Length: 130
Image 1 (cartoon, rainbow, N blue to C red):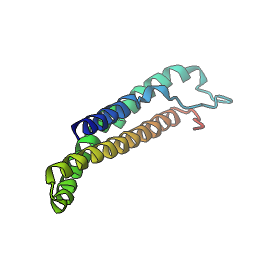
Image 2 (cartoon, rainbow, N blue to C red; image 1 turned 45 degrees about the vertical axis):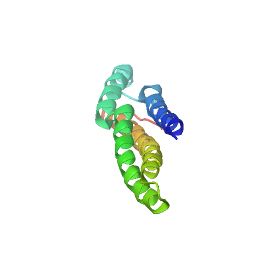
Image 3 (tube, helix red, strand yellow; image 1 turned 90 degrees about the vertical axis):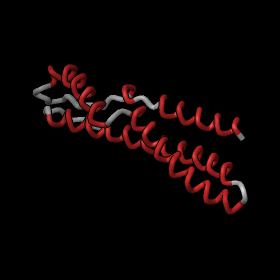
Protein backbone atom coordinates (compact mmCIF):
# COMPACT_ATOMS: atom_id res chain seq x y z
CA UNK A 1 0.00 0.00 0.00
CA UNK A 2 2.85 2.40 0.81
CA UNK A 3 4.47 1.68 -2.54
CA UNK A 4 1.29 2.56 -4.43
CA UNK A 5 0.89 5.76 -2.41
CA UNK A 6 4.51 6.73 -2.98
CA UNK A 7 4.23 6.12 -6.73
CA UNK A 8 1.04 8.18 -7.01
CA UNK A 9 2.58 11.05 -5.06
CA UNK A 10 5.67 10.89 -7.26
CA UNK A 11 3.47 11.00 -10.35
CA UNK A 12 1.70 14.07 -8.99
CA UNK A 13 4.97 15.88 -8.37
CA UNK A 14 6.22 15.00 -11.85
CA UNK A 15 2.99 16.16 -13.50
CA UNK A 16 3.01 19.53 -11.77
CA UNK A 17 6.77 19.92 -12.12
CA UNK A 18 6.79 19.19 -15.85
CA UNK A 19 3.96 21.58 -16.62
CA UNK A 20 6.16 24.54 -17.33
CA UNK A 21 4.70 27.75 -18.69
CA UNK A 22 7.80 28.97 -20.47
CA UNK A 23 7.43 26.50 -23.34
CA UNK A 24 4.39 28.33 -24.72
CA UNK A 25 4.41 31.65 -26.51
CA UNK A 26 1.51 33.23 -28.35
CA UNK A 27 1.52 33.65 -32.10
CA UNK A 28 1.31 37.33 -32.94
CA UNK A 29 0.14 38.78 -36.25
CA UNK A 30 2.55 41.64 -36.87
CA UNK A 31 1.11 42.66 -40.23
CA UNK A 32 0.26 46.36 -40.04
CA UNK A 33 1.36 46.49 -36.38
CA UNK A 34 2.80 49.96 -35.70
CA UNK A 35 4.52 48.50 -32.62
CA UNK A 36 6.13 45.53 -34.42
CA UNK A 37 9.62 46.84 -33.67
CA UNK A 38 8.89 46.37 -29.94
CA UNK A 39 7.45 42.85 -30.24
CA UNK A 40 10.44 40.93 -28.86
CA UNK A 41 10.83 43.26 -25.88
CA UNK A 42 7.09 43.26 -25.20
CA UNK A 43 6.92 39.46 -25.39
CA UNK A 44 9.74 39.15 -22.88
CA UNK A 45 8.12 41.61 -20.48
CA UNK A 46 4.64 40.10 -20.94
CA UNK A 47 6.02 36.62 -20.26
CA UNK A 48 7.38 37.77 -16.91
CA UNK A 49 4.17 39.59 -16.03
CA UNK A 50 2.02 36.60 -16.99
CA UNK A 51 4.17 34.24 -14.94
CA UNK A 52 3.79 36.48 -11.92
CA UNK A 53 0.05 36.98 -12.46
CA UNK A 54 -0.70 33.25 -12.78
CA UNK A 55 1.20 32.24 -9.65
CA UNK A 56 3.25 29.62 -11.52
CA UNK A 57 2.16 26.12 -12.48
CA UNK A 58 4.46 24.39 -10.01
CA UNK A 59 3.43 26.51 -7.05
CA UNK A 60 -0.27 26.36 -7.88
CA UNK A 61 -0.02 22.62 -8.55
CA UNK A 62 1.53 22.08 -5.13
CA UNK A 63 -1.25 24.11 -3.49
CA UNK A 64 -3.88 22.08 -5.37
CA UNK A 65 -2.13 18.86 -4.39
CA UNK A 66 -2.18 19.80 -0.72
CA UNK A 67 -5.83 20.88 -0.75
CA UNK A 68 -6.91 17.85 -2.77
CA UNK A 69 -4.92 15.57 -0.48
CA UNK A 70 -6.62 16.95 2.61
CA UNK A 71 -10.09 16.62 1.15
CA UNK A 72 -9.30 13.20 -0.25
CA UNK A 73 -7.96 11.99 3.09
CA UNK A 74 -11.11 13.09 4.89
CA UNK A 75 -13.39 11.43 2.35
CA UNK A 76 -11.22 8.34 2.18
CA UNK A 77 -11.17 7.99 5.95
CA UNK A 78 -14.96 8.15 6.05
CA UNK A 79 -15.33 5.49 3.37
CA UNK A 80 -12.53 3.45 4.95
CA UNK A 81 -14.25 3.60 8.33
CA UNK A 82 -17.36 2.07 6.79
CA UNK A 83 -15.21 -0.65 5.23
CA UNK A 84 -13.34 -1.23 8.50
CA UNK A 85 -9.98 0.40 7.70
CA UNK A 86 -10.04 4.20 8.01
CA UNK A 87 -6.24 4.54 7.77
CA UNK A 88 -6.04 2.79 4.41
CA UNK A 89 -9.05 4.77 3.16
CA UNK A 90 -7.43 8.03 4.21
CA UNK A 91 -4.17 7.11 2.50
CA UNK A 92 -5.86 6.16 -0.77
CA UNK A 93 -8.13 9.21 -0.62
CA UNK A 94 -5.21 11.56 0.06
CA UNK A 95 -3.23 10.16 -2.85
CA UNK A 96 -6.12 10.31 -5.31
CA UNK A 97 -7.21 13.75 -4.09
CA UNK A 98 -3.67 15.09 -4.25
CA UNK A 99 -3.17 13.84 -7.79
CA UNK A 100 -6.46 15.29 -9.01
CA UNK A 101 -6.10 18.57 -7.12
CA UNK A 102 -2.53 19.13 -8.27
CA UNK A 103 -3.31 18.47 -11.92
CA UNK A 104 -6.44 20.64 -11.89
CA UNK A 105 -4.79 23.58 -10.16
CA UNK A 106 -1.74 23.35 -12.42
CA UNK A 107 -3.93 23.35 -15.53
CA UNK A 108 -5.88 26.38 -14.29
CA UNK A 109 -2.64 28.25 -13.58
CA UNK A 110 -1.42 27.46 -17.09
CA UNK A 111 -4.62 28.81 -18.64
CA UNK A 112 -4.37 31.96 -16.47
CA UNK A 113 -0.79 32.39 -17.72
CA UNK A 114 -1.92 32.25 -21.36
CA UNK A 115 -4.76 34.72 -20.78
CA UNK A 116 -2.48 37.16 -18.95
CA UNK A 117 0.20 36.89 -21.67
CA UNK A 118 -2.30 37.60 -24.47
CA UNK A 119 -3.94 40.44 -22.55
CA UNK A 120 -0.58 42.07 -21.93
CA UNK A 121 0.31 41.91 -25.63
CA UNK A 122 -3.08 43.31 -26.65
CA UNK A 123 -2.71 46.17 -24.19
CA UNK A 124 0.62 47.00 -25.84
CA UNK A 125 -1.00 47.23 -29.26
CA UNK A 126 -0.19 43.75 -30.65
CA UNK A 127 -2.59 41.16 -32.05
CA UNK A 128 -2.06 37.68 -30.56
CA UNK A 129 -3.84 34.95 -32.51
CA UNK A 130 -3.93 32.12 -29.95
